[in-house]
Image (cartoon, rainbow, N blue to C red):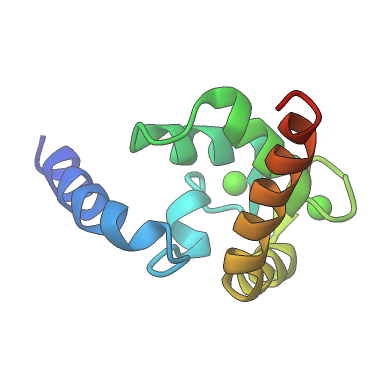
Length: 107
Ligand SMILES: [Ca+2]
Ligand SMILES: [Ca+2]
């Protein structure tokens, strides 16, 4: 119970900063501590806060798992984190642009 409370507190505090790519440590996601993040560990972590569906988390995992071996290494995680941090605004702009392009013809 004590552990759950600590995790909940962390999740609540982290939820605010999570979107900025901050405060997410590899060891937080690597639940069994074997040095790599499996898809189920990743999905569990991402869905625990309730701000991502399992499908979204799964899609994210595939993006983070750069060499597609089914697990995310520390290096892959670090690279993805950097990419997200740097591209955060760009990704949003791309999505917006796509939506406009897609719906543009129907207006
Ligand atoms: Ca693991
Ligand atoms: Ca990998």
